[in-house]
Length: 142
Image (cartoon, rainbow, N blue to C red):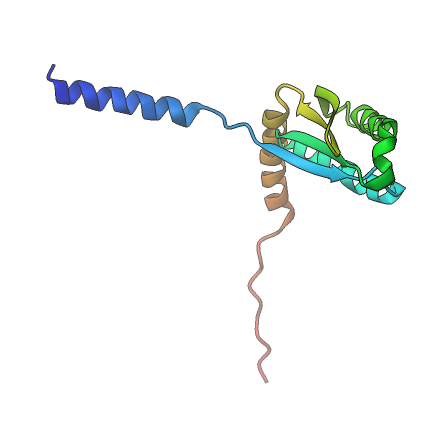
């Protein structure tokens, strides 16, 4: 085997292995300690959607002014969010203070992305069956 062929085959193997690798995507959701209940539910819905898609989610609590003297409010909020989305993911990195921000990383349960893709693929044919083909319409003749 000549060197050119060897080099080509190793490049092909490297390309194939890169194609099969999965990129981890980290989405970020920012909250404030004094968040309204409806706003919390909306943000929680976004986190659930990200986890169902198979992405990791970095949840950040941003403190301003006097809020920085009460980090336990942010800690409780992150604990509550982690408990609320426990069906969809788990806490990968627990809450920790980083300057003015407190962060926590949530990761989806194993196989969440494949389950979401399978459900999406199963819904696609059902949606196509639900829409009947358009019947030819006759034009009225005067």
